Image (cartoon, rainbow, N blue to C red; front, side, top):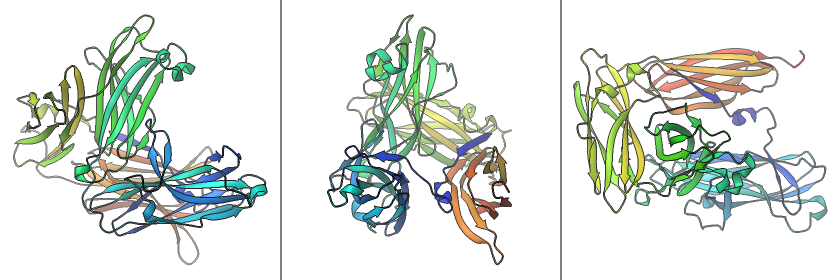
Length: 520
């Protein structure tokens, strides 16, 4: 099974060689643009440690501009699409006190750039993994007003700081609202036409303050269309765009369909993936009549948790039982229905859905309930890890919510091995690297690694930089992970080394290549 990771963002590496320009912000009162790179920056620091970052500002106009930078707290808007500035100290997720930037004020001549360097110092007292946030905001004015007051904010770089404490962060994302409605119900969507259908899921990054601070998540949404009996009709559609969601914040994932499906009764199922194999799911029925779509929405979903979301178990015999805990967050009792579903990420050879028995698939849960899942390995089955998804459907007063957990259960001797392949090529004048890793063992691997670039010189190769590709990425048996990266390098001879590590082992591949001068 082959999985493409996609085109990698190479700004970190390319900044070693080329100027890299971000989008241009226009200040509302004085209309002076400034280019900013990057617009968003992820920083990972351990408690008591320090992290560094840099921001490059450019002047694209034919006049001097005066720039002043400052730090501010932020919060996410309700739809998750923008960030708002807050008064310093008003955010419980503030990182402002940890950050220093230099220089804070400078003048840029036409076409000139300036780098601001920042340092993040994290206190030692942090114990849990958590997220902290801030923005570096710049205010700009023009040459004729260099002695006058600074204008309003012209742009910002959002800083996402992940503090890696001793205890792992377990973010909890839920779908708080799922709506299906015609564009006529909301003027915002009429620009797409009258006969369009809108599906919108409101997603919240929940915070359990008893367990410590929260952390941001990177979430992606997909939409599954089913008939009224629950059978999937089409391949999944994309639901909105991938989005970062701050702790205790929401983001709306929405998709507009210009040509809705034929009249009939349907079920829309939203799936939000976050944090590896974690998912949030919700379903809502809706109807398409001959001339219109009948709106359907869930005002509030059933609030419950399933733990763990990923259960890794080594079986001591061919018959074993595992337990999941359902926690009811509602004031009233809820009904739970338990079932299994194949994991699409693994091939049929490594699935164990048919091995699972749930003798009691329905429960009434008042506060907390342990759910027993029995697994029986057939005699003829080979050793290795098998995988299944356990589905928990909660219902209360006509409302339904689905949560799921992933079961990784291992039998007998486990083999952990992998192969790596590295290619440097060119297509339509664009140089690229392609790295693929194949899991050749019989169990999953937590894959980490990346690319290292060196410039060949007479005395010894000169180290240029690295590009991370994976950080503890789950890779299933027989799965192939492929990474594509465009390269923009000046002429010269280079070495590139791709290395992946897992379970104390590592595999590498090295390629030499030459970048010729254009026209040479």
